[in-house]
Amino acid sequence: MTSAQWSVGEGHVKKTSGWRLFLKTIIARAYPRVIGQQREKSWMFFDVLLPMLAVSAYVFVYRAIGAPEEYIGFVVVGGAMTAFWLNVLWSMSSQLYWEKEQGNLSLYIIAPNSLMAILLGMALGGMLATALRAAAILILGSLLFNVQFAVVSFLQLFTVFLLAMVALYGLGMMSASLFLLLSREAWHIANLAQEPVYLVSGFYFPIKNLSFWVAAAASIIPLTLGLDAMRQLVFPSGPALGFLSVSIELAVLVILCLVFLTGARFLLAYMERLAIREGRLTESRR
Amino acid sequence: MSTTNLKSTINDQQSFLRSFKTAAWLGWQIESNWTDPFLFAVYSIVKPISSAAILVVMYSIITRGDFASPIFPYIYLGNAFYIYVGAVMAGISWAVIDDREHYKTLKYMYVAPIHIPTYLFGRGVAKFVVGSMSVIITILFGVLLLHLRIDLAAVNWPLFLVSLVIGVVMLAMMGLMLAGVCLLIAHHVWFLGEGVAGALYLFSGAIFPLDVLPPFLRWFGYLMPITYWLELLRRSLVSSVAEAFPTLSGLSNVQLLGILLGLTLVFGVLSAFIFRWCEYRARERGLIDMVSNY
Image 1 (spheres, rainbow over the protein chains, first blue to last red):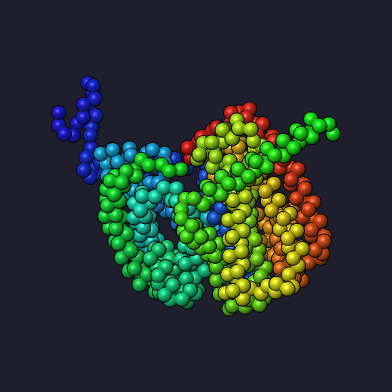
Image 2 (tube, chains in turn green, cyan):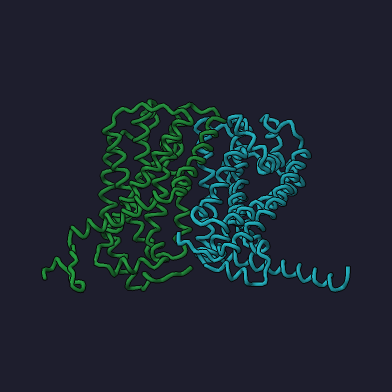
């Protein structure tokens, strides 16, 4: 029997290893994110409804104080992007904590696959599933509030979006390894990271209006520059309200992608070792 | 009343009080003992301040920092007091989910000699305390740093306290209604409190006057007691807000208080019936110890 085969009774099951196993793990972990989540229609409904309620509230605030119409568009785009931040917080960063609570984490560690591949699968699946929800919020918001877009460059827009997503989910993978060590506080910390990030990343207003250093510090969160660049590319008044030029923001996003993905790789290995040594992988402090 | 009946009533009241006090203590432990007091204090401050700061930045960008306009206290105070809606209403319904799905203790609560609605109200106390801290910190932040003008000598304290108490009772009753619904559903139970609180945020004129909404949506706000409650709280703290917006300016404070009281009674009776019906259905269908693992 070759190393690529594994005997079960009289039959033979093909065994994969190396890159093939890595890729199969990614697809296997992405599958429930993409297919499973679509099966629960009520989740889809609430995932779109809740951000839409927040978007509508902020739109009406802008209308109440007589804001120019492009700010309505800013809110709609920002509201759509909250879906990604929520997904990264609740389904990436704190995911390993949930898995620990449900007893799956030890199975992940026991299985002969890479934890990095599992996280990449979660990221890929989460990104695709959330893109559907974000698109729904964007379309619904644009129709309800009559938002006018004027795209300067579809290629740049796609590149900015892609880079922002890779960097964001890289950040999610990195923080997932930190959450590996947390217990009950994981829920509270994820909960705490919602509004402050909405504020400093400028989800509902141009980030330029915060001071330069606050905006620069907030740029560590990929959605800050991603959102700013996207607004510059889709709204006529965007460039005037942009924080940095799109080309600089693209360059920073590339750097963030590299830093977060590499950081996730090393941090995950370190935290996994630490969690095993300290016996926290099966710990469940409710 | 006979001696036996009197004793039974006193025992019932003692039992209710014991359930309430124990549930309040349990709720406080769950809310606060996950971390050290410093991190808990940071957690209690950062979240509401950030939420308020989003609105403040939006407002200051558009109005170039015109904090003297009456719309600013309208938005700021509405948002600050709305914290109670998420804390009390969603908090009470969340206790059902927490006990059933997370701690898996709801069935033990049902076999224990306690009154379940009283227990749920008790669980809401901790949320109310944390919510109160957030409300106070948010308002202090506004007064000290954002030119929110509240003249303590001009505040209508009796109106403020009466409105606050009625409002908290009203929110607790609405929470009980949601808790009943939570007993019956599994898949979207996590979103229920948040969804209702989000919808009311939009329709109750918490952060913008109701006349900004399209006319066909305004009637929903007029039916909700939260609309009148927030208006009373704003008027009691900053009286100039009342004249600035036409939506409820035709109503006096007493009329608003009457409407709030009336709607609170209606929602109170409704929630008691809905909870009892939902609880009966949940027992009948064996849902009290349901664990969906979502």
